[in-house]
Amino acid sequence: MAAPADRTIKDLNGKWVMNKTLSDDFDPILQMQGIGWWMRKLISMATVTLTISQYIEKGTNITHIDIQQVATGGISGTTENRTLDWELREHKDGIFGNCKGKSRWVKMTDLEKGPDREWLTKGWLDENEGEHVQAYVINEEVGWTAEQVWGFEEIEGERYYTRHVAVRKGDEWKQARLVYDYQN
Image 1 (cartoon, rainbow, N blue to C red):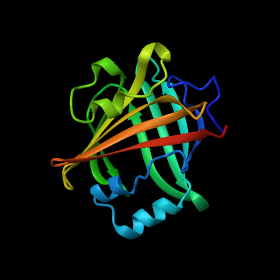
Image 2 (cartoon, rainbow, N blue to C red):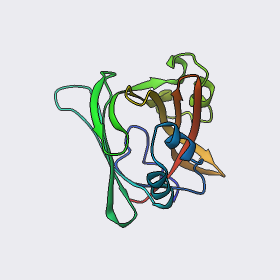
Image 3 (cartoon, rainbow, N blue to C red):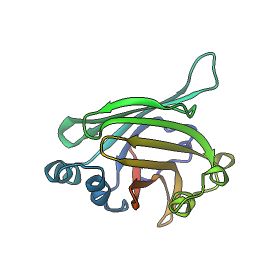
Image 4 (cartoon, helix red, strand yellow):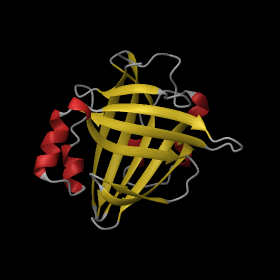
């Protein structure tokens, strides 16, 4: 189901299921990130559900977006705890290994210039005064960086929560759009 009008980038609370039909193939990105063939096949066969809790930290103006990913059959996936203050934090991930990441609110005009900037900034609906979530992750052991921009797009006449993902390793980079259906 497409996203209801009351769900915005400022309120992602609820369950979101990856729409494999509308999403791009993510396997080349996983391969670049050093994920083995078996794990990539399991990920490609699974239906991934995100349970999102978004809130503002008491006494501050800092937004937190906590995401639990669960795959088909209740298999626990990656946990994303995003603090939108652009401070680098370490995170050990069961799939992606030792990473460092940071997140923030961003307008598309404020994204740094680079070969993937056009990909990250195109197609968004003009909502919430042009703000989106930007997430940046680095894995120094494997040698990749990943940048994501989250927001809403119109696809086939429907409004969806999407993520534009660009991963770089050396001079090579890959991109994918992930599309999510709202569940409740």
